[in-house]
Image 1 (cartoon, one colour):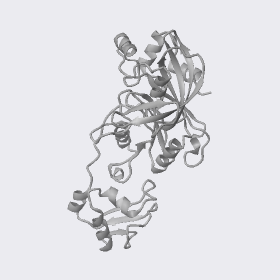
Image 2: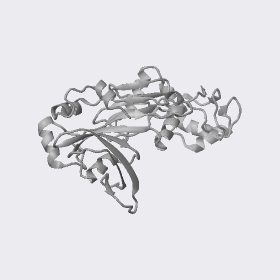
Image 3: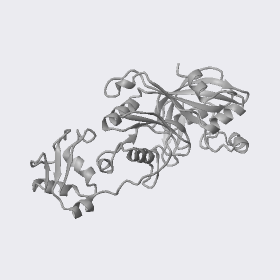
Image 4: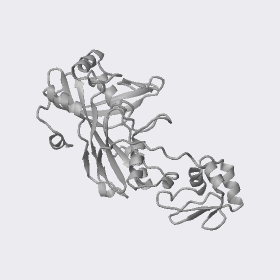
Length: 336
């Protein structure tokens, strides 16, 4: 016999949905049969499976160990990697994602920041293997593999739900740093229409609507420039696939190092000069406006992710920010 007391991260869902997470290899018909026969009970009473679980509810499975093992999912495979934690409390965790790391899995065999996050929470005692069977912390936003910067993780069900809604409703303000080709001397707000080609994972931009396209809005401000390039602060108003990379390339200012939308000759020059193999695009700031609910205590907070070493090296050597460090960057280039 196995029994579980429902906790905050499991409450609010139907009993049958909870059982499907607990024993993912079991067919749905198995749960309903066991519920009818009272081999699975809720608060020591017969249940249908449609009941909504509440904190403190008792779920009992009068099943043999062999049956439990047969229908249990595989144990979580830990993935060890050092996390650059920008902020952490009981509800949320902000990470500075390095270049080359996936935000979330694309294929079952992938290792992403999610696996590193869960391993960290397991090994720091913040979650157990048993709890992972019915709830998994997760990352709430995505960055391209070769884009660095702020990722936001929810450690509880409530925080995951609230953060996901904040990102979906575009309430959070996201600012990026990038190095682009050419001189830009004025702030500008640009609009367009973006369409993604799923086959080649590439997007196209037009100034007027066209079939299958989504409207996009991007705002940018030059921070420093030389004859060849400009350091931009970009405010991502909408958040479409490859939006910043494709939108800046469309107006004639491709991001340095971008293999998909960039200038191939310019990229080769900096590959030879600095060994640069990725786009210089960094999700540097996140601003949370006034919000209500469980995460209201984060209202009007600003978070900054230190710029990667190679990015800073190129800034210095190209005489764009000759003596700057991350504290100066956070202070002098902060959100206004």
